[in-house]
Each structure stands twice: as structure tokens, then as C-alpha cells.
Image 1 (cartoon, rainbow, N blue to C red):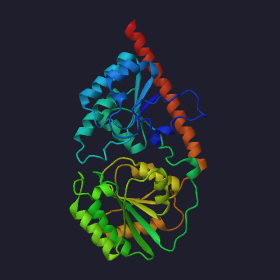
Image 2: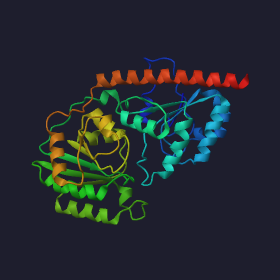
Image 3: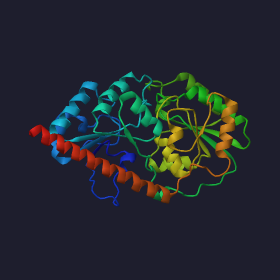
Image 4: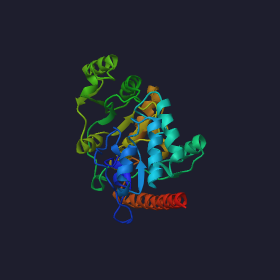
Length: 348
């Protein structure tokens, strides 16, 4: 099985030593990023088809055109190879406009030999839009198993975290920041921590927002929030950051599912978010109107009161991983059988 991207944390859990029968093949250029993988090239597929039976696409096709994806599908068919697509994003969080992403899905979803998604709501949307059935498989763990269930530190004040990262297109950064400042002011023993990547504060950054930067510095100067400016966290730093929070606020304006939500589930950090996509079906969280400071304050208090309902255990995640790997192994076997039958019929 050739996954794209092969280095993504989701993909690592699709193969499990307890479920024999699947070998993961890594394309030579894969780094887990969002640039188009060489494996999405029809030329590469034609030259390397002997090295894999199934191409499983997750992310990374955003840089392709619909025609390029049609050529990819044709190359897979000609080589007798199967195509599996996991529909993580019905709405792409990296783009404000969705028409381009929709056109890519309009190629891949009908062409795939099998479809997977994470929630019943997303599966129903796939059925409604394309008349296709998608298998519903939970998102496997993101944190390493030994990091799941680690005790969280005690602290004198509760910390509400908002990570703006590099101002991704689906972030409602400014309105949620304003609402959060007012909401946290209503809560006892609670501070607001806002993290942002240093690149987003540079005037020449493509998504630089001068008004937001000014508000961040003014709020930090007044003591309304604790502003942390830094580079991208590595995996260890990200886990440590989430353990420093009593709740993580997702300021998403659109989207479908969330890997951040899964990581919070792994480390036991409660999540508050708006009513976006199918997050509520993916993992337990508190959903509120992020633009209403009163409702947001009540949601934050609810999320921080008592043990988090969303906290994972290593045992549960290990059992879930077995289920995920088994479902995918069986799916790949069906796809390979179907591709073999198509090839035989084409040669008859």
C-alpha cells in the first residue's frame, strides 16, 4: 500500500504488526507535507507500479489540477492498481474559497475504488454529493502510545489556549480573540495564552494581518493575555504545550475534521470549538458560539470543570488502532481483488 503522504501521523497507524498482510511503501520524495507527492504523477505511477498494489490518498493533492488527477486515475487503471481515498476534508481548511477543492474531489471521489471517512456526517455528505458509500473509520491516535494517559501537571491558575499558528485560512483569529479576552475576564483564576508563529507577524508574510498583530501586542501589554511568539513546535514541544493548557480553543470558521482535536484527545486537553463540520462526531468537545463572550465563558467553564470526558487511554487507543488497521487491511484486499478482476477482463 502506497499512502500519500506516507509520513503523516494518521498513516502511521494504518499498519499494525498485529494485522499482517499490509506493507507500507514510501515514495522517495515524501516528507509528510502538503506539496504534491511524486507518487501523484501518472509518469511515476507508470514507472513504479510494480512496487505497490494500492494508492491510498489522504492529503497533498491540493497542488494538482483536475486534469492532472484524471491522468493519475487513468495511469492507475492502466497499471491495474487500486485507488483508495480518505475524505478527511470536505472543506479544505487551507483555503477560503472551496470551489477549487470541490473540483478535485469531483475527480477523486467518483474514481476511487473505495472511500473512507471519519464520521457519519461526512459519510452522509459524500453519499449526498456523489452517491458513493464511504466506510466510517475512527481517526487513530496521533501521540505515541507512551505519551497517552500521562498525568497532567497541577497549576495555580487555569490556562485557556488559543494557537493561531500561521493564520491558516479557516481561522477566525480576530473576532475569536476579542471574544476570548472578554470571556476569560469573566472566569476566576483563568488566564488566556495566545501562541502564534513568528512568521505570521512579519509584514511580508502572505497572510499577515496588521490589525490582528496590533491587537495582540496591545492585549499583551495590558495584561489581557500571555502572548508567545515562536517557530513551529516539533512533536515533543507540541505535546508539552497541550499539557500546559486546561482547554484548547479551536477558532475554526470552516472545516470537516481535525487532527488537533485528536491530539488533544490523546493528551487529555479539553477542546472548545464553534459548530464547524463534524468535529462533534469525531471526539467529545464543547461547541459554542465563539462570537458570544458569555456563551464562550460558560463553555470554557464547562470544559474545564472535572475530568475531561475526551481523555484517551493508551489501552483504548491501542484497541482502536487494531480496529483501524484491520478495517484497512480488509479494504485493501477487496480493492486489489477488484483491480485484478478488471485487468483480467480487459485482457480477455
